[in-house]
Length: 517
Ligand code: ADP
Ligand code: ZN
Image (cartoon, rainbow, N blue to C red; front, side):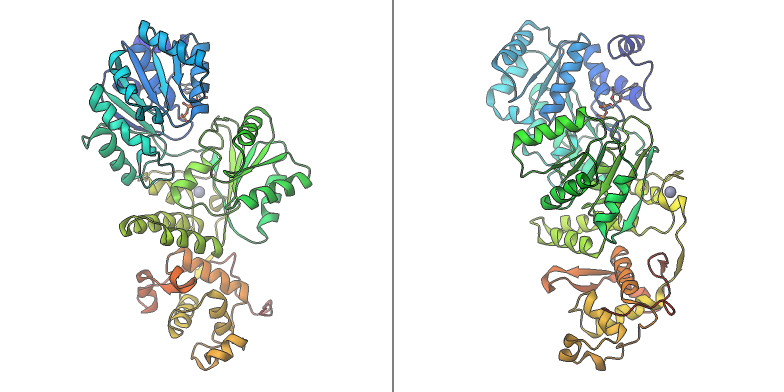
């Protein structure tokens, strides 16, 4: 592979391969079908760009992001590589130049948006011009249930069959289920050679915090990182605007970004973030896939992401340059309720909903972790050899205590009211608060009434939140969010299992018991 080493240096200006790149480059160059899963920033593009130069003919690159395609084409051209793109953003002159180079047989890389495959003429054209490799970026977009589904990605399988050339698929997100879907949809079910490059991003520090005046928590986190580029992911469009304003009020440069903005305004925000230093973008998840800024120093979540995969992808936008980066993810019972409801009320079939609950549970497990966050995170991607020391729990081990009794009292209050109530009313029962609702329902005569006096209202809220986090209870959308017990809670209820809870949010009360409000 001396040729590859020379090209690596002369064309791309790199001294050596990053971990995992060389094997992939070799396999793709030799014409194997390849599925490569690499973390964001791992250097995926090189793994198809370099083979494209090593092989005869043209390589077609399918990518979902016009901005990213244009960036790659520009830098390839600057490096003297014959690359072009056919996208809706082209000027007629650009398109003509691409066609000419294709017909003349001089083009090495042709970038295309998947939508282009819908035009019948595209297939014929690609067959005529001697395409000999298909590279698919962001291959998880073929997954119908993933967060980035692109219907036109489903045409890629047909393209591969028609051209009968090797295909190399790349993605940063792929749990076992998504991988299987990629193999089925892109490779007709014949497993390609798979490369799984470690998911750890050791330079990213992980931290979670229960919401407690969340706006102040975000402002403090950002305020401690003045002058650094960062992203605040928000659950709603309104929050992106509110937080950006609050940040500006405390003297920081901040923009908002969401799918409800005009395309032009979004482009301006993306460009400013890319070019300026120390800018903060408060955004919905609409912001990100096309962001290729290597020096994002921090990512905060003002609301809980929807799954462990979404979390991994979103924090993964920080620190692509390899320098230390910080993250903070806030979560609370409302987030859990919202995310569960979104899954339950979605249109997905039941087995898919169960999988989505599983992905949310994996994230909640991370949020309520007792020891280290990196271990459960990477464990989700089947990585077991994990060294951390770069998470809030490794920095400050959480204090835990046996919460079995508290959990059993809470479950008992739920069951005696037939799982028709939310945490607020259940806590009133546990604390023995004679509210209007308690009186109306006669709940002051329940055996559980007033048995929870050892904890304050806030502390009981933390117990319920941790119970949701461990998936012992789930809000039921059909009962207006009333908590219902899951099978996972049965062993605890029956006294067959115990459970540890985190002490930091639940200090055994007594001296400092707060009045119930
Ligand atoms: P991703 O896997 O997220 O698509 P990119 O292909 O954009 O990552 O690469 C991320 C960054 O790493 C880019 O700035 C790229 O120039 C750089 N990079 C890729 N390969 C190497 C290498 N072998 N040596 C040094 N830098 C590299
Ligand atoms: Zn850790």
